[in-house]
Image 1 (cartoon, rainbow, N blue to C red):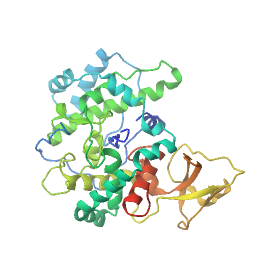
Image 2: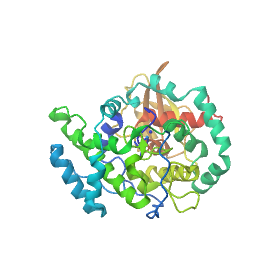
Image 3: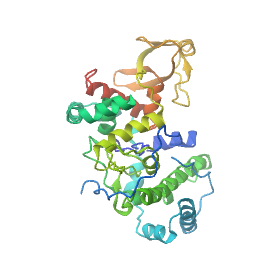
Image 4: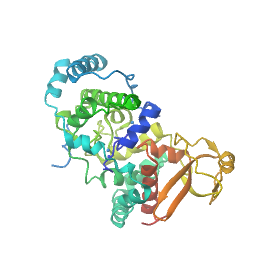
Length: 379
């Protein structure tokens, strides 16, 4: 989705560790929504932020081009793809600036930290107490969303808590500048071994920039003045433009999908993202602690998808420390904890959280914060 104010939002909207895994899987946000919203009517412009996955496939990997060639081509392709006046696209891009601060932020994602350093960022007394207060303040609206979708209220709150500290920090980067910088000016290493990953990262952000213009056309957002994360994610839930287009829904019935000012829309849209993009299974397990037989080396699959049978994991030395559903499949989660190695088994719903941000650290932090907010854990 999401980029992330957690390295703070993907959110998703939306991260070097995340982009590296995106390169391996080719597409960051490609699943279809279970309730894909129709194009929204023209909306009133949301107030700019305080003064972090796509409906269309990514373009194929390509040979790097100078910006003088790549930008006019982008304008032509985006205009044709979404039926937008190319002169308008040119005017917006003419005001875009390449910002070193965006490059620097992308190069230092929090998710790259070991778990022992990442967890304390979010599992604090202030963050837990803030989440409980937020849940109490919006309990009726969150309960309606949970009853309708099966996505727990505390999980929705934890996402907002990790991404934007409950709406207090939705990002100060100009969204057009962020996407423009990452689409056209992110430094390349020149290493042939990294070229494919760099191509896909560039293609991803060019697509998100194009999706931003489509979002402007559909929802009337003033994109030239929108602010968000350094990766271009927006609003309380930090949706990337493609995720905003595909998964944002009108939660309050006013005919708009406003992820900046309407908490009803924010709650409903995060739940819709979990159902559509993540494949959340209401009532299903998320993750359980496990032991790893000392004779076995940790198993590190290339994907976080929960596709391994418990029997196969047992053969690799993993034993769950609490009851798990018969016939469940899981993925081993190995973490470098403050007190030494930690081993967990993540199920389908853990994988669903990683669809918001492709990081086992992110998903575990969201899960543990949600448990603490619900009173089932502490800091």
